[in-house]
Image 1 (tube, rainbow, N blue to C red):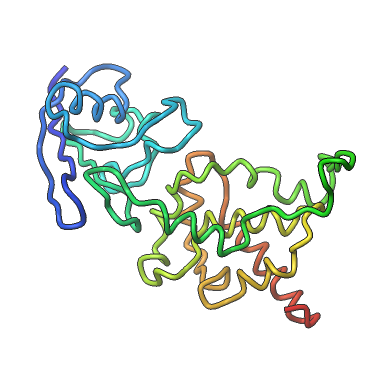
Image 2: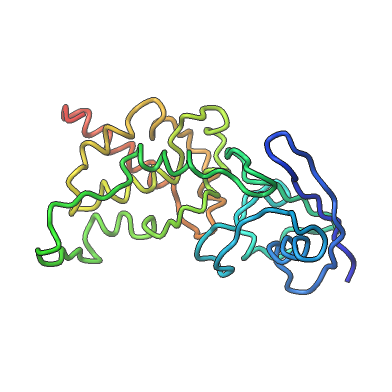
Length: 237
């Protein structure tokens, strides 16, 4: 196997690319490449990872210009040549090297009403949601989002409008709008109805195309658009 010529972003927002030669191996993931650089070539390289099995999403970064989980992305699948470019996720402030500041991303989930608010206490019986209920079926896949930020990094609307809540926050809002146990439906619809909310989405579907868990934030946002419109016609928001 030949060596990979790996270009890695170093520094903060005003940093630059630095090149490393990494041995190319069979079944090698992008995370394997980054780990090799940190352990063998430059111990000062900063990046995030935790589970290594596609459950936490913390290893996400830009690979040859596309946001991906690096632990589940094999070099042979994304690299036809022996050159590889690694950068921090787009649309996020850079802390250092491949590490992004996720604070704004999570703040937007809060702004979109991403916290569940029920009416029962721990002393009440369990609220049972049938798997074939209309609300559960509408959001069945959407609840699997782990907040990795790949959809947010892939969204062109955020590049144009930094205030846009983004696909992950709106996807989360959709799951709660359709949750019959939640008591803040109208407040949540009001939160996502502004200029930076669901109607700011241009349905380019970059978020859906790039989601590593094969979810469709585009579908969730479309659902929010319908419910916001219905609520507005009823005078609820």
